[in-house]
Length: 457
Image (cartoon, rainbow, N blue to C red; front, side, top):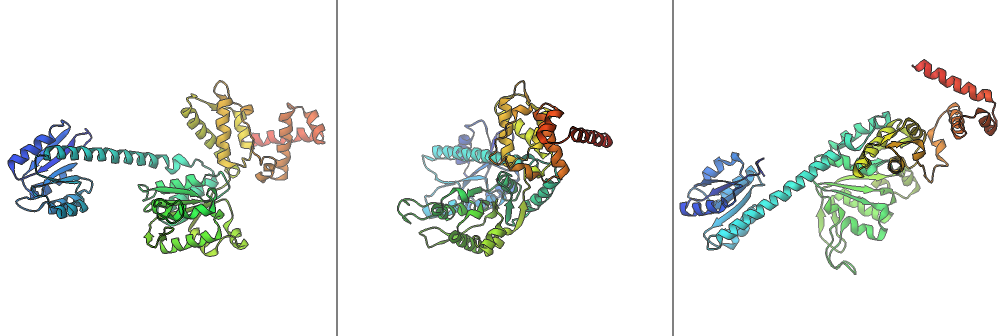
């Protein structure tokens, strides 16, 4: 609606004073309606700056035609609901006016009152639905602001943020790479909802999750009767994403015969539904993602080189969580706040020992694994404090992850010794026996660490 007080502003454009009084009376039956009457089309056009929500427009005016006034109204604001009232039932004229944006065409007779009132109510319902959609879109826009969705202050992420801003300002194809669980779909959504296409559809499809024999129909759609079971026409993802963004996740899993069809669609900017002959144009921004190294896939012959260059666009490589320093704690607190709020857990804090444990773990499952670990810890902890024993790491890859941290040999030695000191309650004698090293080696290491801390302070 145009007014904050929820009043609906309605223009009644009618030269017959008797009919004008009747229409105005109908409109004012609802106390929320603010009604203004104009006797000519020129007066209506001159007052469009008052921003009416609805116009009841007589087709036959003394100074112009209702068709001309309708065009002027739609040029000013295409969202104004216009109901045409006419003394004659002319189907061809009615169809033309509806094509040009009129909401309804009502013939003046003994049913006009009810039909006009119902038309106004339907327009208002449409306004309410549009307003609700806009509010939901605004919520999405806020939700997917870069600062709200992609948390982190590490050097690795600062470079990613710069690329995201560049991507959002253009329509260039974006290719997002990174290990599983690094947040590739979140990045794609953030680009979309910060771009000029944010009011249009974001359509995602996971190539690896759909059998290859069904993937073509999901992407391109099909016509009724195209194959057994095709009882109706199906619109594919390309058409659904028109004017918006199409996100192709795990693009590296696509089979070669479909890669050729995808390449043609991207080159021609059009698709043909299965079983159809008519080409359908589309205008969609393309974002792809994969955990694979597509250059290797090209060299192996499992991914088309021409498609690779068509999709490369602006490459964004997401770093693994183990390379993001203290972003682990920023993300952990973010997930903890969200989960606690959703489940009415109150304030839940992470103790320093638990923080140290989080920082020492390489998270082979990346951000997705961190989220699962933190949420479980929030349930397992007592008195609103997550302790190190509440953090349970159950990654199937955890045997191999120690080497992912790429530390110096000295740092690895320190980490191993600290692990056993924690395990055996700081019993230096027992640890020296378990590791087959002298006690002096352990004491010397601890002393060096104390001196390093002292020098930093």
